[in-house]
Image 1: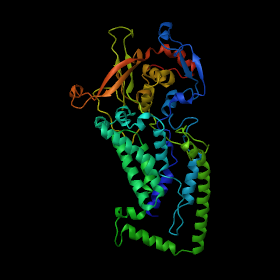
Image 2: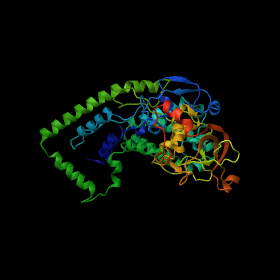
Image 3: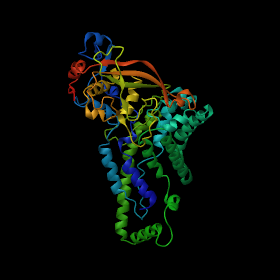
Image 4: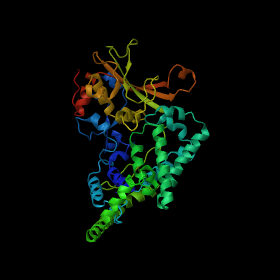
Length: 469
């Protein structure tokens, strides 16, 4: 099999996986089919503490009652009503891969994946979304407010204004214009692949967007034919290219009847797959052209062809939820010492360098980013997490970076504090003190809670009550 054919096969294997869909969606609140009015956000609290909580509209529980935290962590790309595990689509793609193996007889592999479709989805959802994409100012904010910034984002955020305008304009070119290069002949297709890979490398360097960019590179590799990639492999007598050529010549001398039958079978499978994909693509294309374009959705149970979109809106300032605990018997006492729980990667400690984890992905850190610009009423899982922390639950604590109560009794109270975070200025006073971030308290995210306060709340949702350890 030639180099390009091998890459096409790899593309077919990877393209159905759910990793490239719904990455930035997936909040538990989005799963609610309807809402119910609650007398207080947390039922079963003492009256004084319940009064401190706003009246809330809470999403009706739809996930497994004993896995609310896991449901929140697994929500993006795997939730009801959104693109998730490909089911039959995965089997169809693998079947197509088996039946459409490209031999030396001129029978081509079906083009099951169009590398430019994802870019068009992204570009259109942006140009129709936040106004900052149209006035070219989105990159003024993106590096600081993206889900999990890395060290390079700290540097790039302070780039001059004209550089940010150039970045935004380049983004539109790469996502709205370059995808069509794949249809304009060999040279333009190669250029498309090179530009898309360069674009993804820039995104990998400038942020922790998990495995999304790495997977996006894979279909772009199919833009390079064997002649383009030949320089990567040894040539000359006995070289890899020479051995492959001899293998192809030997196979070409096989029985013509078998060759003809194989070509006809492959072409029929290609045609059937093409008709199937074309039919399933109709609602996706209509959605792409619609001014009310929706992203991260599936229109068929097979889930072969879906919509994708991310960063249609850019948050202009970064807020963080900081979970804190105290061993003080009185949470309101002025001398109560509140200690911060640190996550593995998301901003918390002002002096901790932004992490570099791509292509790895900390789902809880991402969900905390979503929770910060919503309220805890939209994210019931965060109260469930607080209950786990009050019980020193080992599994929940394994998702965090630092447990301030390690080796001691669990905290008596846990609360959530809401902060606004900004990058410190390189060379400035805060940077000189070793701070990567500066922050300002906005107020409480949820009030101090005790384990006994949450018994009624857990019972009403049929969650198992955490046991102190």
